[in-house]
Image (cartoon, rainbow, N blue to C red):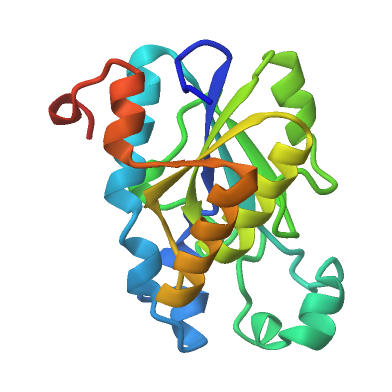
Length: 207
C-alpha cells in the first residue's frame, strides 16, 4: 500500500485547545495535556507539506452543545466529568483548533460529537466529492478518535495511513497498543519523514 499525492487527503484530528493547552479541559481533568500538545509541530509539518503540494486538507473538531444534550451515554454515564469542565462547547476557546494549525479559508472542518469522523457527519460526502482514495491521519488521541476514524476509513475501503509521530495519547501504553492494532490490519503506520518523502517534500522546507 503505497502513498502518493494523487487522490489523497490529510485529516488533522481534534487538535484543539481543550486537548492540547494547559488551560484546556483535559488538563483540568488531570490528564497530561503535554502528550497531546507534543504532535503539534509534526502536524504542522504535514499541514505545510499538504498545502505546498496541493493535497486536500481537512480538520475534525470535537464539539458539544452548551447543555450537552448531544453527549449521549459517554457524557451522561461513562465520563460525566466532561460536562463538569465544559469540554469543547461549540464556539468556545476550548473547542477551537490550536493557533499553530488554524485552518485556512476553504479548508473543510468536520464538527463531530463522537470519536469517529464518519459518525453522523458529512465527512464521507466530502471524501467522495473530492474523489479521495488515500487518507493520511494525524492528531489526537491515538487510541480514541484517531484509531476509531482510521478503522472506519479502512472498513469503507479508503487506503488509510496513520502518522505515528504526529499522533498523541495521554498514556504511552494506549498509544503503542493503538498503533500496533491499526498497523496489523487497518492502516499503514508511517512517520512524518516517510509521508514527506512520498509527497516529494524535503523535511527542511516543511514546518
